[in-house]
Image (cartoon, rainbow, N blue to C red; front, side):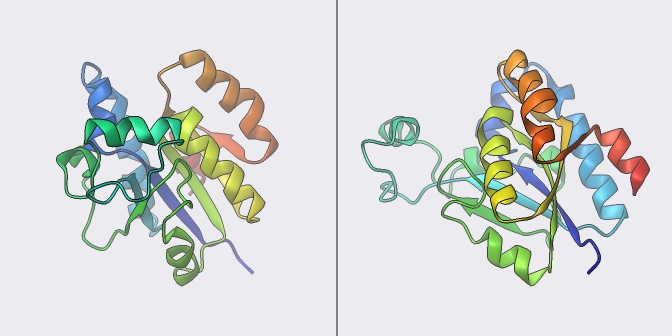
Length: 185
């Protein structure tokens, strides 16, 4: 069976990207990856984190998400959970809504991947220590072939990003820059 890849663009939504607003150039690598995938007919799948009104899926003991629910943010219909316009999401590109850190948790990502017959994932996202790490681990356990685009991953802590991309991720995936990946297409 040949490789059937998909590019996952994870958590590049307004409420997360806006934390880096003073650095608009941070989106350049993500834009290049999406454009290269489209040109190579590799499906681009956008993943966002969002919750229902009233946060029924967020228990008080969930430290990360209960803080969000108390502040009344990140619901499905808010500007904060829309994919950032710089990524130019196309109408035919799936939008997967997750309810936890991993792109697989509480989402229909696996159904979309099965429908597209995907067996290789190219991962990009914010944050490296959040959605990228959690999705990589779960995808590896699900036996996907994996590539991480190191310069299309971003973390608030550059040292954490470095350790993950240089020491942790290579154990379960190929780690490439966007330029290296696009050259291989």
